[in-house]
Image (cartoon, rainbow, N blue to C red; front, side, top):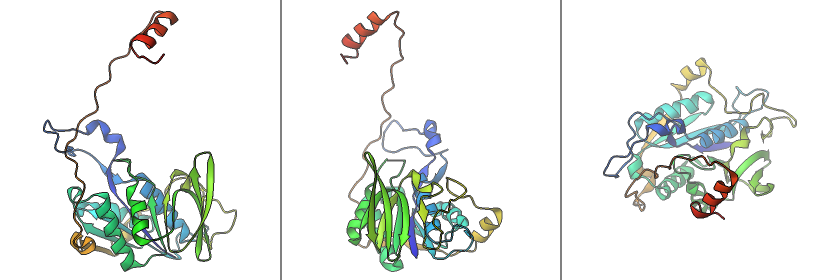
Length: 276
């Protein structure tokens, strides 16, 4: 099985207190922010690795995992990190955040899918910087592929994937004929959430998170292939259609107050909060 995993660089959510917006409101100041791979994309990478291995022997890659990102040269650090955890090859499309929107990213990924011809595209369910989940659905539409979103479980079958989707009230099971696109949720990294044809039924991974790379794997990752493509070569004549025109911080919250009794609380809820 060959799997393509798109990765997006995002600012570490723990650095939210470092985000600054200039008075002009024309951009977000990123100086001092720490960058990492979008957490849900890491879950997709872990799922891709599990689908291309025997769980009892994860060091032997039985398929191919290709990771791709659209970004400047320093995103290669993120790609090398993905290679260190087990991905086989990486592709970087040279671009800045200002040159991209969800539509262009989907168009670029469609071109790469056509070139790479993977059996599966695995993506995170959303990105944590904008809380958007547009690209996965747009890409599936462009490819005319079957798709399952918010996957909590994936089991490989002959020529298909059996996917458990998180929905309101439970889990819905869908069988996707390959090639297919799947976006994954947090539960995909549970010990018994992903099974390849090679992994024995009932096997449980000894961890419920993404795997970490040992030092030898980090050194080996430096020698793995990493191709670089120009943005125009993967989007053609397509143009940017969405731009952020202004940024602003959320309004400051008023300090809370203490009330002396329930009667005063009810009075303020009615006259000030207007909730009763």
